[in-house]
Image (cartoon, rainbow, N blue to C red; front, side, top):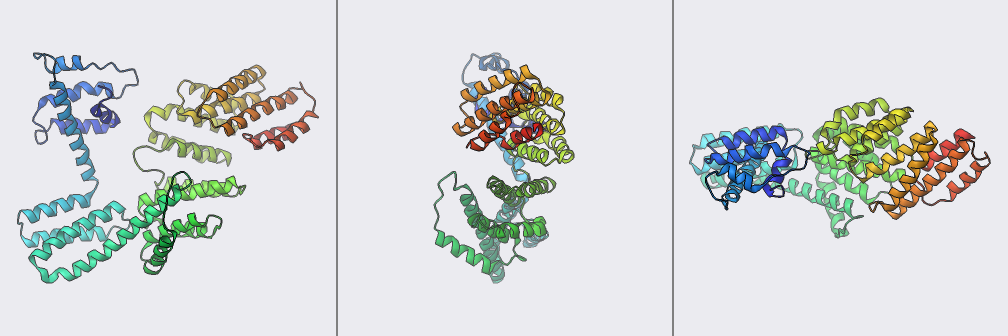
Length: 477
């Protein structure tokens, strides 16, 4: 039962959606079989529990069909409920796409022969609503195009004399939407070409970009122009000019940019900054932080139901590194509810541990790291939980805890398959050097040893958190 399509979809719904679904299934307008409501009620208690589930189909069958011999009736009922769940999800999507709803209403009016003045009035109302929307999402544009297409077919069949202007408007809007989608697919492909195969005709792309530059001026077509700038930024990464131009244009025009483009372009710009930092341009750390702050304030952090844990941890980590602790704590409080429920506890504990570490409160750091020990969100968090424990025990001067955790960390690194060979070397080297530095700190080795360690740090090709190790040596000199 737990592996069924029905159960997996239901488990993905939140409490509010499950309540709405219960009313939907109980409505005689959508469902005439009361046993669908009974089946849903029986499944609800199992959907939000974290405990192992023992959901037996035979027991369910007996509760739903007490006077029947076990057979296919439950499977038939599950299929009926699944269809209702799908109808419910489609209904919710329709409510969130007003132009698709209006298209269907218009289509219904035309089919039923509703008077012309009602149809014309309805189309004008939709057109005005669309025109007054400053920020038009791509789905809205496509939805309105469908409304225009339906109305065009109606006008063509009933009053052909008026079709010319409407055809011109439809072609203009169609060309712009086509250009937007074309640029979007180029942008996604070029962005992913380092991890996936993306073949495209460079001469054709140059031709497209030249046409865009000529046909779509920035002031009148900000959405097209921002994609154009983003593509140029990716194609000429070695030059900062397009990054700067894109930053300025986005700052001036972000209220006009579709939210899905805003999310994607801020993500591209943040990745651009990360690559510059990896090249040694540390000034881009502050630029990256400013981009994250804009993503937060402009609600452009993510699409879909949950905030990705990778982006969340990057923001927490960077905020702490730059000592923006007050902002980082506020970000944590406001955005932890947007993390998937099954990961919230672990990520909150690790984030608090990181903040306390940068505050110099190492006892609280260890407390929060140990709170998450039994429920790591993913391999990244478990690796860094152990890594941060080592640093904290070093800072507190707890010799036995440092040595035992260092040994456990090396075993963990060696046996964890998800850690690359390069990163394994980096963690190994860090741990060995940390123990050697600690011997000097604890007066178990001579001060002259520090110079040897510094030389070794310079020699290692793979070494985790080199900057922190050098800071610890500097503290002892």
